[in-house]
Amino acid sequence: MRMKKIIFSLILATLACLTACNKVEPPVLATAVTMDEVTMDAIHCSATVVEGDISDCGFYYGTAKSNVTGRKSKKVQGTYDAGLIKATITGLDPNTTYYVMGYGMNESGEGTTEVAQVKTSSRMPGADDNGYPNINK
Image (cartoon, rainbow, N blue to C red):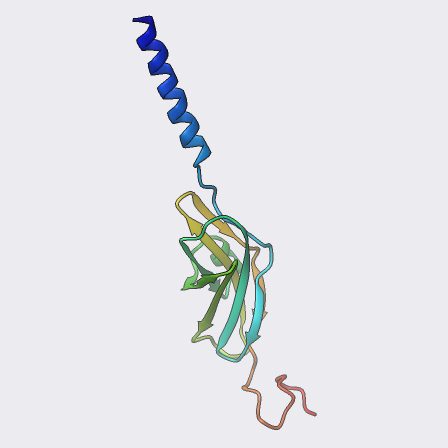
């Protein structure tokens, strides 16, 4: 009887160890969102994953910071490759301030960036200007 208890205890300890050893942590993202390109109706953005597996990713965005942090904003699905989450947020209004926060998820939870503020341009750059709205050569 004593031997059965010892074996049972060893099996439980082994299972507990295996469960703890294989625990997946939520992803950790770098603090900042990078705005790779901003136009009058789109934002091309990226975020770096510092550690962790990713099963879902993208960016929350909206015109109010509190809506973005509260996850009450819109969300765009991103792609994940080589430690980088990328997405293009489209259908935006010109000359408008938006707040953007990157996210990465796995079965253990969600990791996010800080909220970044960006303003869409007031017009599309023309062929004869330097690429910056409202600044002439």
